[in-house]
Image (cartoon, rainbow, N blue to C red; front, side, top):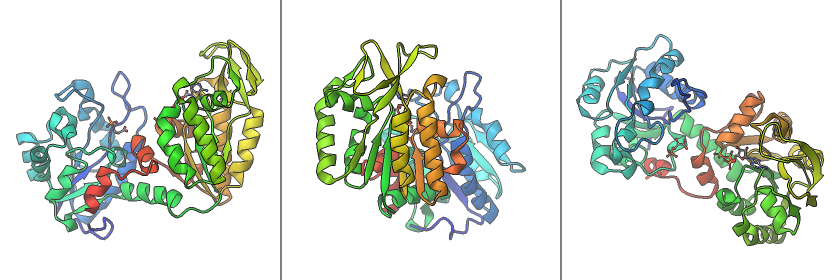
Length: 398
Ligand SMILES: Nc1ncnc2c1ncn2[C@@H]1O[C@H](COP(=O)(O)OP(=O)(O)OP(=O)(O)O)[C@@H](O)[C@H]1O
Ligand SMILES: O=C(O)[C@H](O)COP(=O)(O)O
């Protein structure tokens, strides 16, 4: 393995795996370009050295053949805007003659964007022959696709073996993502507080279990809190609940107690009579949510309780909103927690925010530059915090 910053790309064609899996609206406009912007420093460094860049990515989940709505051509105009003054080309295939010829003709300083890798079912299957064909396009392989590092696909993992160790490396984004995750998990300044929210306990169970080994405080908010409340014998009205996870919730609570981890569950909620922006609302105690009402946000006492712990923290990991922040009536809790995380960061804490919804929330409240690190990883970040080795990382290190 070689270090990206030390490598001189002069005269080389760098084959860079990026995660340009960005959300598009019906008119194919990019609604959040975070992942594209995050890849720009890596691209610029290669071009600045006098190399050329071949970008490969997936977009969406096509069924294994070309589908216009998943074409990377929709990203080309914005990629050009992000790289002003750079020659940016598009190949309507990722292997095959058009890709091979365009890659071979690529001049130093130029960028070539390949068509969606998932138009070939071989990509997701991790097909070796497909990976080898892709590898022939470049002289050096750079993996900068942190968002896809949990997938053992041809372009993210299998391809690395076709490059010698000094010609395969992580890009700047991947390095930054891994180093911020390591800072939280391995180089932890204490107290370490993990804030978990979102809809489902089942999605976060492995993370909670792993965090019980590392965190001093675990704060639970969002829809998943009500499963814990019900497990404690509280009435939760028609709030979200995973009935089959009640025993597990109790086991987690017992484990936290045994390990001396402070496990904080909301004590009050903003309850609604229906799951809708125009719902009637009332503030309720979580000791007893009335029948027919559902908790859709945390309320003042919970916010104050959580805020105190967050402000005293030196390391903060946040994944998942505290309420249904997409609806104005239920965004206060998530916003307040985002503000506490920003304030703790200003006081010197290291804060990492990850997961599509939490990142969207932090962006929506204009606080993205007030936290230490905003991750481009959804599933990849979660798996990293579950303690898994990500195939995209392992393949470079092997
Ligand atoms: N009290 C609640 N009741 C119902 N839904 C809720 C509640 N609180 C939050 N949510 C919803 O949870 C959703 C986010 O859940 P999810 O488990 O996907 O979280 P996430 O960690 O942000 O996921 P990702 O990692 O994909 O970003 C949001 O759409 C939000 O509206
Ligand atoms: O958005 C993501 O999490 C990555 O781009 C991976 O996409 P996938 O879940 O379709 O593999």
